[in-house]
Image (tube, rainbow, N blue to C red; front, top):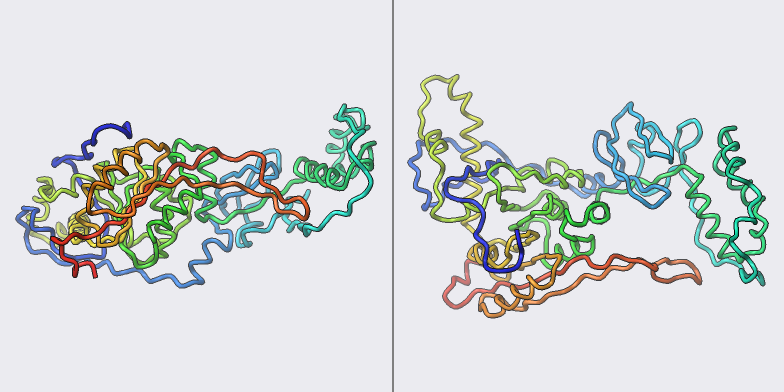
Length: 457
């Protein structure tokens, strides 16, 4: 759907089947829902235990079994693999290893794959100032004549079982110009040779930066140009923290809502508003390897139609709640279905209770219509954050929000990210970088004189 233009209609209609999701809340449905209901019991879903610091850190500290993991290869690319005990993990031309060798080890260190398939922590040289010499690269020409080893010679060394370090040593000994180069040039050559002939990888923790960077580099259009720094600024502008209450509109596969849940650490509530009758796929959220305590009792989903006060339950749901079962067997068979409907009504009631601390949007739909729909349910001083890969749609929204007395400090920013090489006497920015990580609109919602200020305190 186009992002610019007139206000787009909100997806969903009164005949849509709502998303059913378990909830801790047991309030009655809102008064606008005109459904004759039989007396029913409260659901028995308790609040999951709050994660302590040790449990929160364990997810990004040690490599887990049976879950997805990110491996940075010698080429600099990141590969996603699933580590299952007893299985062999292949990383292409860089070798293979047994998953049991890496499961339980810490994230961060670089592991070298030995010839027998075992793993060994690769010693990283400490960055030190190189000793400058009188050597220069002025009279060195990369004409291919300085290397005495041919491709066939290197291939023969590999077939004979020579290790990567032995091959590198042979190449350096056969390079006539190596000793004539500066110390800086020699180090660059050594790093290129290691990335080509050594077999190693680095397991990366499934945190916000790793997940966002992996998906941005792999398919930026799928995440609407949401770069890692842009996602971090979304959480910062929204003031996401444990115990908060947030509204999220995520049409980028769960990348945004997964980051919000990670930041909250299993405490608080997140209402995900979506445009499908069935549960949203959220195919990118599993990349975070969130525990059940991060999600259960925290994430609740609703479709847009259910956000309207005049919306009523579909007939088959209303009939299910009103039905009286004669036998205990029939009651047991219908318990799960009825509990799901009750939980959805409780989730919807919590939505109408309002007092949400922030609204975060990453969606192709027209932004102002979504903000206008959800405005009554935001608390005073709530943050509104919208991410877009294009500037013009946000400029139009900014103009309309500035004319609305319910918002102040309406601004648009462009995140900027550039990597630096940090080495003694060689610190400088990388020569290439990504063009843009999108644009962010931020505003603060205020209460006017006609609203109840005490309700937000």
